[in-house]
Image 1: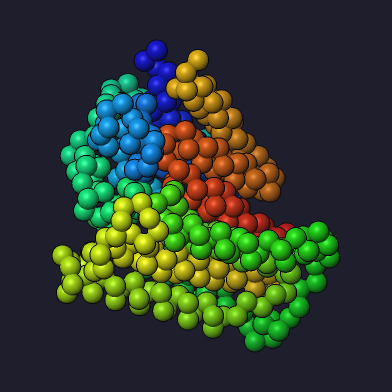
Image 2: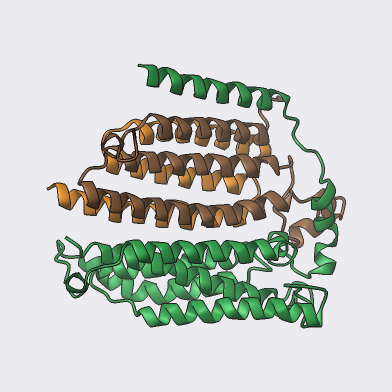
Length: 126
Length: 233
Length: 85
């Protein structure tokens, strides 16, 4: 039963998505594919961070009637950790900005050389 | 071949680290440290029912300011990169015609989506949601409108003015907190009000509305730039 | 069958599906397929956030991660396709 805990399963999903995303970033040759790898990596890290704040059997950190009617009548014993959620909230918006910026670079690179293969961009290689 | 071997080695290292972290991970059973303080005193100190909003806008408000600045910088750099020539600017995109359904539905849906976005960021302190989500919803209304009509010109001045005014107001409200309350971005510059009503939690609904408008304007700006870049041949 | 058991079952299903889709996104040769697969991974992640009692994060991920990101990917793909044609 210990392995079937929601927090642990989400942690595992997060780790595996990070590895798949990293593998995509390292192994692919197409620039758009590399950016997709970054997006998956980003999603994996977000899942990982939220799962660290999850506490079994508790509700969302919003003080409403569901929390007030809990058996112990205490906010401290009925909500999950709000801090990782606040961090992930801003991380997702930043992630969108990063993806948009990477795609703008990709368009600019494509305009310069008419190709997206990373092996053709070796001007700084010696 | 060597390349694949190196990639495999790096990934194996990650798998090893993650395996150790996973097997030794003990799920939390109770709130500790700063999280316990936020959960226990959040309702009294800040007056917001949604604790995530309390953390984002008040306890960690400075982070939010930095984050909005990053988004602004991203939008500016993208605008710089995707700048068009003079002759491309007036070109009209000829697409396969947009479907009748999308055009008609967008006329009804866009005002409703905008209104829902405004609802989400004004009620950020009571229900799930807030400035970032509401801003994204408003931007998706803009996305719908430029998908229904690929040649639609979004008024650039409106975006710039909304963005500048909300950014400046956000900082001014923060500075007001230094003089009238405990510090930068303190929300007690006006009374906390009755817990759980729309006009409560001090300045949080006002600050979060400005955040929502700013995020919406910035994301709309990014989308507008990408749409315009299609004109370039 | 209490709530927790149902949540765990949904989470396992979502996890397996999203790992398969992430693999497709990295490995598939058609760019449009991999963009869609990455978008669906994001959508599944937002369901997972909802199960983990984080509705705020779930809303943001659904609107930004799977909606707007996929849209700008397609703007770029469209531009590249018109040049190659």
